[in-house]
Amino acid sequence: MKIIFILGVLAFSTLYAAEPIQHDVAAAKEFLAKESKTVVLDVRTAEEFSQGHLPGAVLVTIGGDDFVERVKKVASPDKPVLVYCLSGGRSAKAIATLKAAGFSQLHELKGGVTSWAAEKQELIKP
Image 1 (cartoon, rainbow, N blue to C red):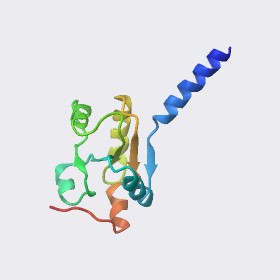
Image 2 (cartoon, rainbow, N blue to C red):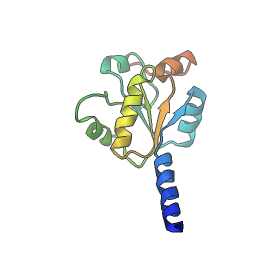
Image 3 (cartoon, rainbow, N blue to C red):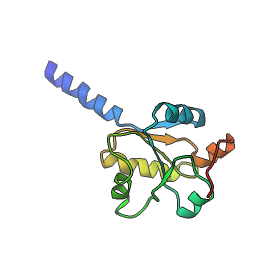
Image 4 (cartoon, rainbow, N blue to C red):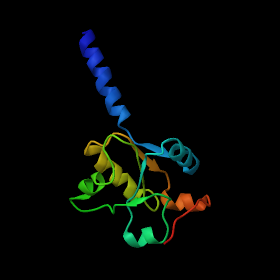
């Protein structure tokens, strides 16, 4: 009986640990400052990306059967990834897809680039 309980606790903690963490702008900035190896993943379109993106962001537009493979070219499933889009819809879909593919350290910028800009944070424009 103890073994079943221990296995249950381990399974629950593994599932819980894989849950994405949402960050508001201040928490995201703090997280990125502490976790310098985090991949900042923008899942918007190329046109949206060119209108302004977070510093250090990598563009991998969500969609297509090869989305996970394209992300794996820039991010490792066992390393932190901060995902964002315009306001949160596409990033939530991206996170669900990446979680199902085994990414274990997923983070989301709550409110996306819209909240980032509203807080007057730096946006990179070509």
